[in-house]
Image (cartoon, rainbow, N blue to C red; front, side):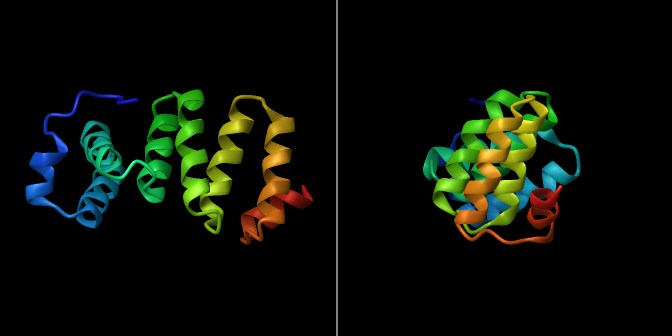
Length: 129
């Protein structure tokens, strides 16, 4: 599920960066609109650690950003399975379901988030809306 062809393998990245450093550089590239670079870094992290919650979440956000909302769902789901306590992961997953007009699924995921104890102002406002 690579959105762009990576120019370096993880082995090459591994010599240069730790996973945390690669994630930070990916976030910085993502925020700067450097989608290919962010994709390359997140993909390298996921090759090394397929269930990495932040890299999965960010890859999902990246996919949504380039209009591949359906393809983002497995990334969000993996992030949630790895770290269900992060409210932003739930919000991103719910938002993607809403974008796909899967409102019943979004409501079910919201209920699941609340039953898992996820907290956050955005979750509270969505559940009362």
